[in-house]
Amino acid sequence: MFSKTPIFLAGHKDDTSMDTALLVWNRLVSWTGILTSFISYSNPKFTSALWKNLYQLFGTKSSFYTDYHPQTYGLAEKIIQTFEDMVRRFCPYSLELEECFIFTHHCCTLPPALELEYKTSVHASTNLTNAIIEKACNPRLPQDVVEIHPKTSSFKIMLEKSRKHAVR
Image 1 (cartoon, one colour):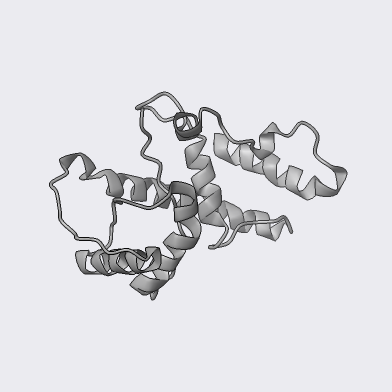
Image 2: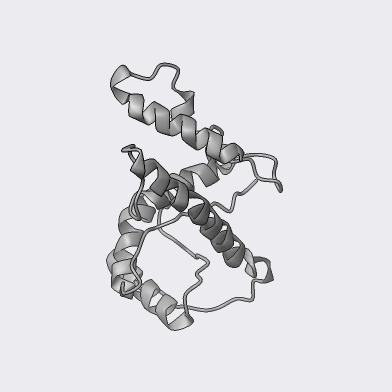
């Protein structure tokens, strides 16, 4: 069984294809290995430049061709829609936590946190989490920790508030 796990990377709207290639290289390649394909929501010119920069970083050359893959149509849009929904739900609540002097995420730490949430959520199509499909186990999460150290009481408060918010 294969998962279609997205990997969320925080970038900037002005990032060049080389900036994005370095981001992919630093965050993705060590986890997935050398990429053979990916689904991108970017325009074809940017995607082509990104691949050229990635292969330059790999120290290899590649010939590009395109295949017709109807199974991928709508996949990127659905995942982006899900990610946007997660961000919309978290951001206003994040500001509420920030006002309570509790740790909160910002644009650099939010994507990995949301990615972890996505990977450890049960998906309707498989009835499993993507983490179980990929690695046969879920990673340890904050709620899995039995004892929370007294010095991390603000984290415990944030965790409890987040749980209540998620149930709403």
